[in-house]
Amino acid sequence: MQSINPQLLRLSQGHLNLLQTCPRKFQHIYFDQLGSPTSPEQQDRQNWGSRFHLLMQQRELGLPVESLVQEDPQLQRWVTSLVSAAPEILTPAPETFRQSEHCRTLNVQGYLLTVIYDLLIADSQQAQILDWKTYPQPKHKEWLEKDWQTRLYLYVLAETSDYVAEQISMTYWFVQSQPQPQSLKFTYDHRHHEQTRQDLTRLLTQLTVWLQRYKDAGEAFPQVSETAIPCRSCNFAVRCQRALENSAFSSRQSVLNLAEIEEVSI
Ligand code: SF4
Image (cartoon, rainbow, N blue to C red; front, side):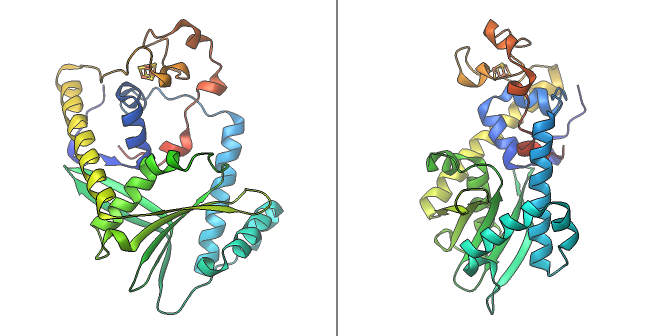
């Protein structure tokens, strides 16, 4: 077991998603360090996503992108499609603050909640968070609305700026959608903000209790119920003595979504 100081834990949306999905899985991955190796396909996708984000950052900073584009002409096509689909947000406007890879941290109950916006655009009236997604657009908007990335990104901006919730929005751009990039926009309001505050408070209070028990007595974090859906595709099913058929899952199916947890800093 690692030596853990709850007061120094930095938590991203990936941590919150995993903690909410299954506390035991959170423990195995972040404290027991029992993650799985990344498959070559996943590694390729992650590398491509990283290059796309880097290219967009360089472009925003006015830095040369030729070397990146030469390595992968497809990147240039996606960027060109995105720029033509969203010229108003990718073209700087006067008296507007813009910053790519904009990082903010909020201390809640001693945890450092950390967000990194792919692009933040703000003026005297509103603040827009933009996020580039290199995976296909989900079928259901509700899936993203409930995801901790959406909730945490909006919450942290409202808590760390002078904007009221109604002035803030978050837009995902799915850059590989055909025939052109598609977007999903989430507006924000006081009601959603207070709901997120309550849910965060509950989740972090639980985490503190679980951490303390784990640290003091080696008590494992709680599992989800035996029939829970997450167990069906979990690579810890055998360790957790869950459904037998889970043990036959291939590493490809059970491997972690490292894109979600790469901002780990514990
Ligand atoms: S098998 Fe189920 S209980 Fe065990 S870590 Fe995975 S999701 Fe959690």
